[in-house]
Length: 327
Ligand code: AFP
Picture (cartoon, rainbow, N blue to C red):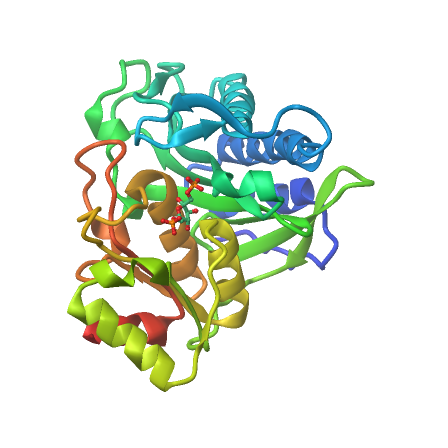
């Protein structure tokens, strides 16, 4: 029998919330809770760095490129270090895969969890003081504890996620996560240094009026994507595109809308990474009543073939995603 759980009020601190809901998780031993706390802690440090980015010389590109060929920003590198450190300490994580590193980081063979993370998404927005985010997925390892990790542990589908979330560093900083029992959002209270529950049981409106896509690429969209965009215009929808996935997703989650990064002539699989961006946001979208697809399949059913795999991505309000699929 499931233990009775008290619905915690708005303003509840993240730590208390995590503890209160720990028994919802089938492997409840406190390890997953600790990981969520570690991620929250690292995000506070990253938040601090981002807030002072205009003040000290940590802005701008560092000169190197990440494994998918994009220029790394100094804050990308810093965020990667902060999250890696925070997640390495407790021993719960056997492997960490990050958008910023070529291969996985092998941590502790006795750890039960694999983490996929995009430490700082939308980082090309940093120099212009626009919102950025962190995206994470948490998986149980498939192999036996104590054994070296293998490909099965690393290349899991989105449906294997046990938790996922994002942090939005925006006009306020928010942490939103799911463990497969709904979605809850916490706003950072900087004077207390605490995340507090601000958006309990988040649900995505079934439909909306916002479409988010880089329309500058429209010459290279397929006829079906063009047809859906025409539908959006016929319906007098509003175009909104920040160019930082977490920010675009979060807005659409609250207001109702669709985010699309389709295949283009340049990138046959779109630009976004299945394991660092799409899986986590798909888990959250579905938990909030939304949908996520590559145009054919649910994103979370896609079996990754490599760590940095890309996929076309349609995510948001269920009716809008369904309409886009019909096109
Ligand atoms: P960066 O982290 O390189 O800024 O990429 C951000 C991103 O992965 C995602 O957050 C955006 O929605 C998308 O790329 C923007 O891509 P375009 O600039 O091609 O529209």
